[in-house]
Each structure stands twice: as structure tokens, then as C-alpha cells.
Image 1 (cartoon, one colour):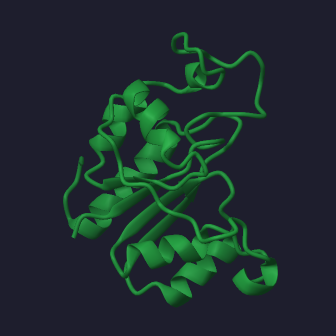
Image 2 (cartoon, helix red, strand yellow):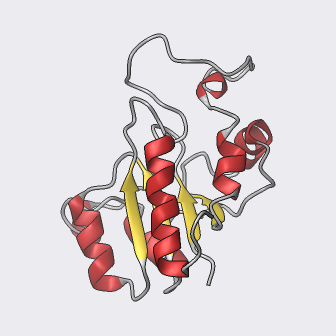
Length: 165
């Protein structure tokens, strides 16, 4: 089964908090888009996964980011009512997205690329998700890079048996 690829945006695809000035890849009326490398679009599609926006950008990701990256419109995770659930409901230290992503995956293999993933999220997913999952933390200062993509490629190959996806 094709793994889902849950994509965060801020700090994952669009770097922030790193060295100034950021590398820019073009001009746009949106102030953050020039930080987003359009070459990531084809790289993400080549991973052999089914990409899904997992971001608070919601449908704006398809309106603004997909065209910039050369991606088709992608499914968007709809977050639970109220956004960030209190720690009491989600568990101490558990990211507010974790439960919703596991629910959305519904046992299917998945990769989650985000800059806020912790060991608590990994342990929670291991205990509650029956399928393979890679929770990969991206360095927000630089955004998704070659090392991150190589880790995803290796993981996909390990669960599909197909190298060089």
C-alpha cells in the first residue's frame, strides 16, 4: 500500500528562525513563498507516496503552495474542532496533530514531516498505529533538505522493497 506523506509547511517546507537572509527562489506577493524551493515539488512526488497537506494553511496550501511547487491539488487534513486540544485530552507533550494524523492514516503506512515532532509523538504512534510510520523532524532553520529526503527514500524502500523511489 502506498504510504501517506503528511506535509507540514511552516518550518518544514518554508524555513524560519535560521540565518538571515534566507535563500529566495523567486518573487511573489506572498512574503513567505520565495523561501520555498520549487524543486521540492517534483522531489516530493518522486518519493512514491501519496502527499497530504497536514498544516494550518488548510486549503490555502493548495491555492498558494501547490502551484508554486508544481503539485496538483492535494488532500488536506481537517483538524479537530478547536485546533490545539488541551494537553489533558491529547496527553502531556503530545503534538496536537498526532492523534488526527493517526486517525487519518487508519492503519495505512505514513510519513509525517514536521519541525515539531518529539519522542512523545513517536512513542504514541508506535503504541497506537498498527502500520509502519516514520515521524521525521525537519530542522526549521533550513527546511526540508537532501538529508531529510534521503531518510524518507530509505524508509519507503525499507517498507516497499523498492529502492531508488
